[in-house]
Length: 218
Image (cartoon, rainbow, N blue to C red):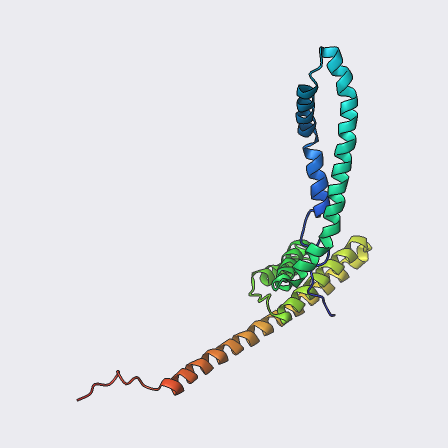
């Protein structure tokens, strides 16, 4: 199954920017109102408490209306620039590797305890194994792992009692295949790195030969 290395909208952020801005406005509404009321009172200087109360009521309504409009405008602005921020993150050289690592961690956490002891052992081994998330082959494997755990968990949530064991067994077999695939990837990567190291060592040996300073002259 092909996978897109781009980060899905909101996938790596627990709170979207517009929600963060709106929450900030709600969080400081009372302090902002009190500060504005004190400043306005100092400027107007009501004669007595009754005059202050008469002035505070319309001021409060106007403040809340203006504050709500400001909060709405700021939230809309944050929502408008959010696609630009997501596009920038997708173009980041480490975007695919970051998503792959998130998929691995999410799959290990989501699948734990769902499919039985053997599946838990495999998931723990997968999580602890070496992953080169900069390699597209590893990223594809992490995406497949995420698909297996996510779809199997969804199937379990709606399965009839007689289907749960079959779903768990199917998921366990798929996880076992993924573990074998990861071993093969790591073995192949190790072979390539060994060959590279041997090639560099051979190059140095041929280029420089025995050191002229290693033998004593007359």
